[in-house]
Image (cartoon, rainbow, N blue to C red; front, top):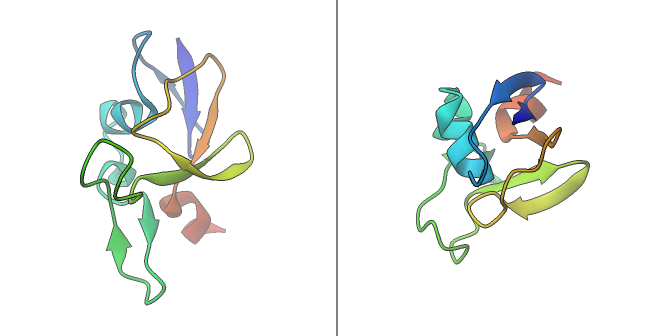
Length: 86
């Protein structure tokens, strides 16, 4: 299945979570999904949705938990890396 991570088409197996797809894509976003108020890089910690450090924008909806969201075909994922390029 194809999903789009920061504008890049990535083929991932069915059943992957969004954070797994980000890691599978070998992007810097696998480590940095967002930045703190002070601009420091943040990334996923718990893998259970508790820490909320894996938040990304999915199909235009901000603050989605990438560790708890299963990929769907054509899904558009934007990480902090994408936002910083704007």
